[in-house]
Length: 298
Ligand SMILES: *[C@@H]1O[C@H](CO)[C@@H](O)[C@H](O)[C@H]1NC(C)=O
Ligand SMILES: *[C@@H]1O[C@H](CO)[C@@H](O)[C@H](O)[C@H]1NC(C)=O
Image 1 (spheres, rainbow, N blue to C red):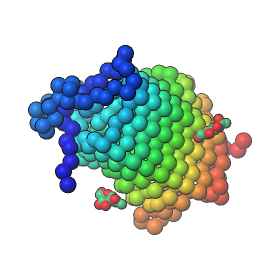
Image 2: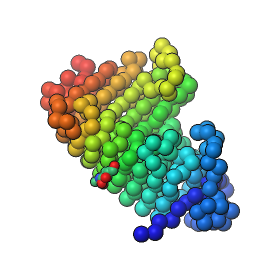
Image 3: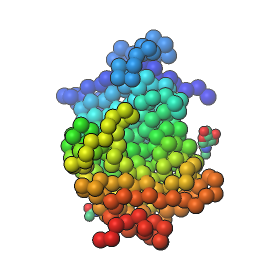
C-alpha cells in the first residue's frame, strides 16, 4: 500500500480568512515530493519545527493525511475553533523525542476521530486554553498516551475543561490516560473523562501527576497548583506492563477533587497483584476496597 509522506513543514495562519476555504498545502510552497521540503535534520529539539501548525483557524478540517517522521510535533492546533481531525495517520519511531501527534492549545470544539497515531511522545497533548475536546476511536501506540498538559509551567495560569476521550486503544504506550501539571501553577483542569479505554501492555495506564518537572529541574516548594476536579476514568481495561495500574499524585495545596474510578479492570502482564498509589485525592470508586483505599476521607 502506498502512503503519502508529508515531509514539508508549514505554518498556516487562518486569521481573517473566510470560512470553508480550503488550504492546499501545495499552494503554500510545499512540493510534497518527499525530499525537497524536508526540514534540516541536524537541528536540536527547540530548533526543530512542527510539521503542520494551524494558528487562528475556524472550521478547520484535517482529513486523510499521513505524516511520517515529523522533525518535532506532527500537528499543532492553536487558537482555533471548530476543528475536525479524522482519518489521519501520524507515525514516528517510539524513541524519537518530542514527536507528539496532535498538540492542542487555546482552542475550542476540537473533534478527533478514527485516527492512528504512533510516535515517540504524546499521541495527543491537550494544553492550556483547550475547551470542549472530544477524542474517539484513536489507536495510540507507540507513544506517551493521551495527556492533558503539561499545565502550569513557570507559574503560568492554565485552564482546560470539558475533555472526553472514549473508545481508544493504547498499545504498548508509556502512559495511558494522563493529566500532568507543574508545581506552582494556577488555574484548573476539570470535567475530564476517559471512557472505554483498551490497554495493551501499557505503562502507567491511569496517571495524574501534579509534581511534573522536566529532567534536571529542581522541585520548588509547592505554594500553588493547577486545581484538578471532576475527572472520571470509566471502563478502563486490559493489561499493564508495570504493577502500578493507578497513580494519582495530587497537589497538597489544592488536592484532586471528585475523581471517579469506575470499572477498572486491569491485569498486570507478569500476573502480579496490581498496585494503586494515591496522594491527596478525594473521590470514589465502584471497584471496592483496593481502589477505595486511594481516597482521603471526606
Ligand atoms: C501493538 O504493537 C506491536 C508493536 O509494538 C504490534 O506488533 C502489535 O500488532 C500491536 N497490536 C495491535 C492489536 O495492533
Ligand atoms: C463533570 O464532568 C462531566 C464531563 O465529564 C460533566 O458532564 C459534568 O457536568 C461535570 N460535573 C460538574 C458538577 O461540573
